[in-house]
Picture 1 (cartoon, rainbow, N blue to C red):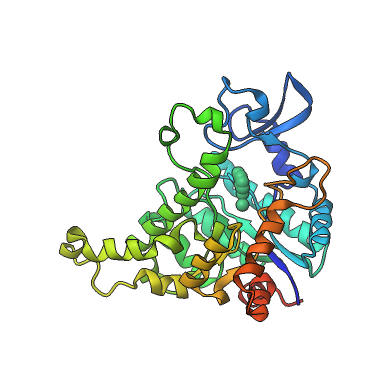
Picture 2 (cartoon, rainbow, N blue to C red):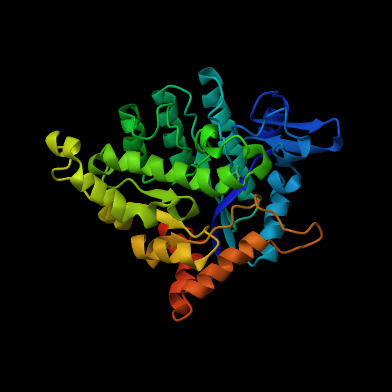
Amino acid sequence: MPTVDVHTHIYPPTFVELLRSRTTVPYVRTFPDTPNSSRLVILPGEDDPSTPSTSRGRPIGPEYYDIAQKIAFMDMHKIDKSVISLANPWLDFLPAEEAGEAAQRINDDVDGLCAKYPGRLYAFGTLPLSAPAETVIKEIERLAGLKHMRGVIMGTSGLGNGLDDPALDPIYAALEKHSQLIFLHPHYGLPASVYGPRANEYGHVLPLALGFPLETTIAVTRMLLSGVWDRFTSLNVLLAHSGGTLPFLAGRIESCVKHDGHLKKKGNIQGRRDVWEILKTNIYLDAVIYSDVGLKAAINASGADRLMFGTDHPFFPPLEEKAKEWHSVNANYGAISSAFKDDQSQAQDVLGNNAIRILKLHD
Ligand code: URA
Ligand code: ZN
């Protein structure tokens, strides 16, 4: 009975070097009051010089870049296989002329890391989304030939205008043609103004707990409204954090679409595939939601056969400095066991069988 982690990140050493060479977000650096520990500063808004350095970004240790630590973490939590992905903000910040080459280097690095642990590691590749569409498509074609790649991780900005941008159509077509799944992951959150003038007092709670899931929900709803899945009926997307709030809000989204006079007038809703159909046909959800309440919404929306265990390692580390086990991981294990207490075979599907089948992880 394998356990598979489909949401687990790495910054390969070459990427960390790139971040160390930078002085604007995203970057890695030490601060004068903590000269012996580097901090990873990646999120918009977490670079405010008026906040103490201990709340700017997060400490970065080898768990972020050393693949042996990933394997040790997997062993500790009885995870048999992991599908690793570069963490946010991927290559979104690179100038167009650098992105294509950087994506090749990172994807080769990550594929090489997987090769060191046969049968245990697979990966989602990274696309050079700031480069011209032809460069992105070339990398999609190259990734299709790399042994350990099982799709691509992508943020919500697309080519700069979001995932409902018609300029993405050739990229969606290439991903669909090569049966490459998109792992859609948030990074940008919501505009800082919604967190209010006291945001600095609340650490990362508002952007991570609410900004991230709402960003995902808005991005995927824009894809739905622009008809991405009406044009690309076999395009598959794995949504991070159990779909943000999509499972909970799908009924409201569907009702608002049906009642919208503007959409009706434009004829945009004639013959469209509805939200529920897409949730059960094109969308997969990870099980990174930390409670059975959210997990049950995900199960009801997409089905237990479309849900896959994840950890978000190395983010959300153990709560106490000396603790070995990761509370965040055990919360997700606990949510699965509580949601499926009467059906161990479905629990096992979510823990690993679904990922093996959907992502073709047979040894
Ligand atoms: N914080 C991030 O920036 N990324 C994650 O994937 C999780 C937490
Ligand atoms: Zn993540």
